[in-house]
Amino acid sequence: MISESQASALRRLPSVDTVLSDPAVRDVTIQLDRAIITQLVRESVDHVRSRILGDHLPEDPMTAVREHLQMLAERVVSPRLHEVINGTGVIVHTNLGRAPVSRSAAEAMSLAASRYTPLELQIDSGKRGGRMSEISEMLRLLTGADASLVVNNNAAAVMLALSELCAGKEVILSRSQAVEIGGGFRIPDVLAQSGATLIEVGTTNKTYVRDYEREISDATGALLTVHWSNFRIIGFTAQPDQSELAELADRHHIPLIEDLGSGSLLDTAPYGLPHEPTVTESIRDGVDVVCFSGDKLLGGPQAGIISGRKDLIERITAHPLARAMRADKTALAGIAETLRHYVKGEALEQVPVWQMMSASSAYLRLRCEDWIYQLSEPEGVSIVETSSTIGGGSLPDEVIPSWGLAIDTPHPDKLARALRTGTPSIMPHIDHDRLIIDARTVLPGQDSALVDGLTRAIAHAGN
Ligand SMILES: *Cc1c(COP(=O)(O)O)cnc(C)c1O
Image 1 (cartoon, helix red, strand yellow):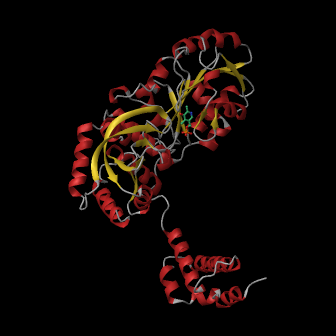
Image 2 (image 1 turned 90 degrees about the vertical axis):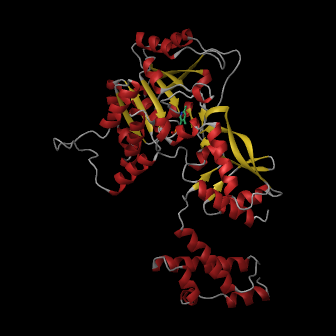
Image 3 (image 1 turned 30 degrees about the horizontal axis):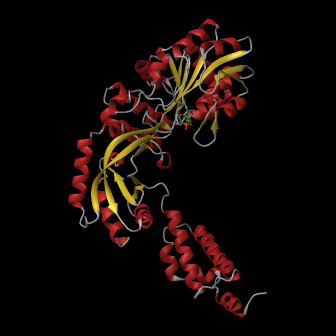
């Protein structure tokens, strides 16, 4: 039964037509298509009706409809993927879209999206050309790999390589590498999906070449190694070198496939980090097919790259799934432009991920001093030493010393929310009760927006 007050509220609930002819409503929906407005008005009226039926009585049903409609209208016209200033210190931040690309990569992507480009055309002959030729050539120069193929992401790269090379066969993998990476990418499941049978060898902590060798038979499709991107095993451990496994695979005429994960082209060691294996090392060690991400330490757009022996890459390219998983023209343009930075020897200056990783402590501190100087209400704001991380499931536990602004506040969650929901949106790092903006991951060109955003959020949160 509905109560008297519910019935009264329902009687005052406006009709869709009444809402549509309300001038205040016209103002908030001015940017929208007519049919969409009607739909949103209907949803708003329905929303308020069900609130009333649930005994949440609005003071004025018309106002409640108007407010809900305004919220819906704002939500559909404002892009969800707006700019965020990353103050977390996590360089490859999965929730913030991993690697931001360089300015010229972004321009190349925008051009490829908005104009015609010779994606599958050889300009000089006018004949059909391969969409991978430029990227393949640059990767050959950079890593020594004969050929390469770019697909949607590294998960697709691994799935595709295994589907072509190992379906119906056995794949030998160290027990320590039957791992889960990120949400839901589990090597045993990927192997099963590709139609291969997993043969686990060795133990969790120690695997030797002879463990692989013992399992090799006519049924073997490949040896597989998977990089421990997001965890470590320390202490009493053993794993053969890639070159030893490559030699073993070669002797038995089977390929060695590697899921390298972040796929760095440069050494991370000069930045106080442990050495992250590079694509070049894998190829040099004799890995036949190496799969890696385009948007982790490579610093490009989302992509998965398969590099290695020409005959194998050609086979993989011809697999029906290759067509389903191939990278689109904007990703290809972004990857090509990112690789060009490495070819030109300017990756440290131009690729944002490497710019951030290599930024000096002195420079980061100076930036913080500059921000403090510009803040109009610097009480409670101080410069602190902090630590950045690589993120994106690379180099777990490893930190790079950094500098940031700490904001003392009695309500860190409230201020963090004000920062996130402000314009620009600022994502801080919360360390106990302190909010920290790590200078390392604030991109060049975001400084004044950061200062403005901080000033507003501090005032708004009533610090
Ligand atoms: C990140 C990662 C993947 C998944 O790559 P995506 O590009 O996210 O699809 C697979 N394997 C390893 C070892 C990784 O580090």
